[in-house]
Length: 331
Image (tube, rainbow, N blue to C red; front, side, top):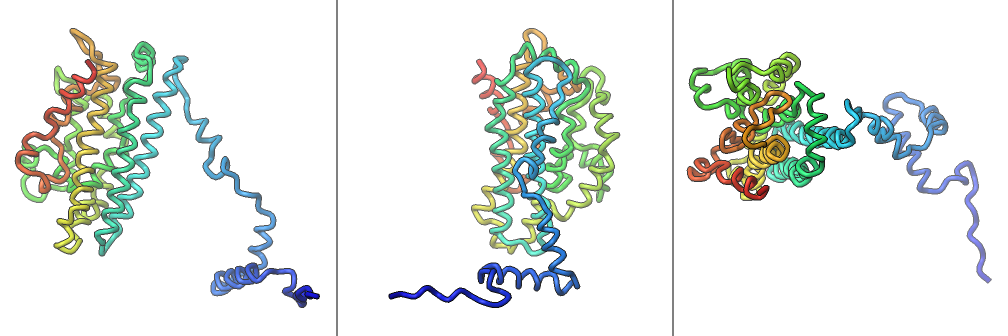
């Protein structure tokens, strides 16, 4: 007749080997710092269970939509922009980790760039929420309460641009020539490309959207530019071994990032602007006074992060055909 195993005896009898092993690990964690493990365990006894809704601050998150009008579709407008900014924050999280690599590897660079591209792919694929997800009549009414706010004022998007490339690539060529040798970060920021996107078309003066944006963020943008001078994605790639800089996976990731940020994302905004603001024979002005017809199309801006990676033909045709295709699709 089989006998039952003898139960363990002694002070450790009530603990399984797995629990004892974890207690020893914890003792090893806290003892070097002179900490009392028993006190930490007692604190754990009084702690509440972690709940999903608490961990992600669900109630706070859902309370952050505060429409200014009673038009139902304004809530769609707010939520999508908040989602966009959260994706931008994810992108910046990857740029920061990429920039911290003193001795980057090909696999790490491709990983970080791939995540950023995936975030932008998700944003681009979902932008029909903005293009076709609201009633035009509602949008044209509630948008009037938003003046002079504009998506142009997304500082996180500007951070992404600065973290992607050398700052000089965000300054129009003719202005770069006027700056001469070794311009400062302040000088570069003083003629950054996006300034032309928020000017009064008739006079060329800065729109209130731009002056308010600069008043709030210029100092932070200059500091960000300094921080990423040697940490931007291109600078990190230059620290790779020479043979790895031309690896097909890396080149694909860099070129996709260039197209996502400088062509596909602005084009989605252009598509939305055409949907809601295009009227014949006149156009509805944007809430922030941005001259969107000239600012959004990539063929006009020709903003390119990595000109070294593109052929002369690709550079000459940058953005060509994309806008026409969208207009054709929209009938």
